[in-house]
Amino acid sequence: MHHKRTTCRACGGRDLELFLPLGDVALANSFLRSPDDFAAERRFPLDVYVCRTCSMVQLLDVIDPEALFRNYLYVTGTSDTIAAHNRGYAKAVVELTGASSRELVVEVASNDGSLLRCFQSHSVRTLGVEPATNIAAKATAAGVPTVNRFFDSRCAAELRAEHGPARAVIGNNVLAHVDEPVDLLRGFKTLLDERGLAIVEVPELAEFVERLEYDTVYHEHLAYFSVTSLMRVCEEAGLRVVRVERVPVHGGSVRVYSAPVERVRDHADDVKALAHAEQHSGIARPERLRQFARDVQTQRAELLALLGDLRARGKSIGGYGAPAKGNTLLNYCGITTDLLPWTVDKSPLKVGLFTPGTHIPVLPAKELLARQPDYCLILAWNFAEEIRRQQAEYERRGGRFILPLPRPRIL
Image (cartoon, rainbow, N blue to C red; front, side):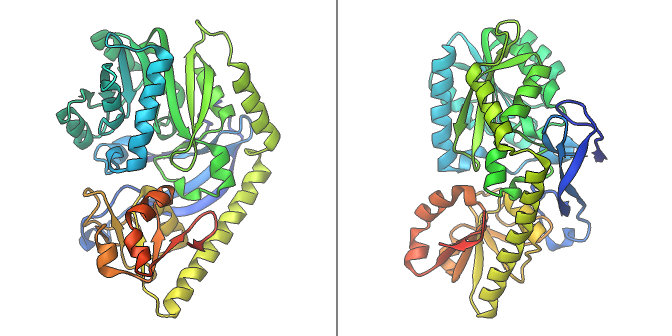
């Protein structure tokens, strides 16, 4: 179920430095059904390394994807923010690639089909590829044809033979989830038609480092990409980057469009300029990442001091959200039910369960107003504006939200 790599995913090098040890942590999406399950819960090392050869930031501890993704609890369709993002995304890709009703758009790790539905509204043919059996079935039932399997270069050849070539192959927040990103991108390339583009969206390393987003580290997220390391894995897969866009989702992401090297000989000049600026900023240098790790330790001390002080003064505290990132933060900081007795979430898949490692009960979102705690820690901080809008009544009644990152603060 668990093995440790010895080489870099991007360049194959062995000069890897551990800079952020987050301890032995339960799997971030493995919520527990009852207190009877607590004792048997497994934990795995959550350690972040940087490759000193190519500057790729990554985990070396790899959990079997069958354990992580076959029954999955994250559904893209529950957030207003993501819904708006998807509409704009589909429109941009259709305009850029000229996809019409004749062309196929394939999405790898298509989740509940929310993005592909936006392509269907442009009359484009769609195909999803999704390893989570429960979510693939949900997507197909909602009218988004979805193949239930893990995607790799071999799968790509079979899909092309069966469904024909694709004008665009899209992967959102999947490149970072696979142990062999080069093979995944080779599969994207295999599927493309003569005008096709491979498009991936990943959280951006610069945002991760500058905003101290260490809670986006969990066992599913095996790689933390800079533009430089994205260019490297594209090169290894026979692709060249033609366009990079920054998108304000999941704490700051980059969307990268690439084409086969046979069609485009080199990366675009402005993409090379981005990589050059990144190297100049030193964002992936080991000394900068060591400073990041020191800042993470400070954040933990400050958050524990804040929550401890509120509890000592007799204040009640609840949580908002039960995202995977929240579980990294709770586990690393050692926040259990004595500091945070409960959290709420909008996803019916998580309500009634207990958070991995810290065993905090997840209640329905309406419980925030029913219980009206003095303070509410926003664990899903990347949706903080949406949450404050939806829960305006909580603040109107005198409740105060706490944001944990980059430094804990009461709103």
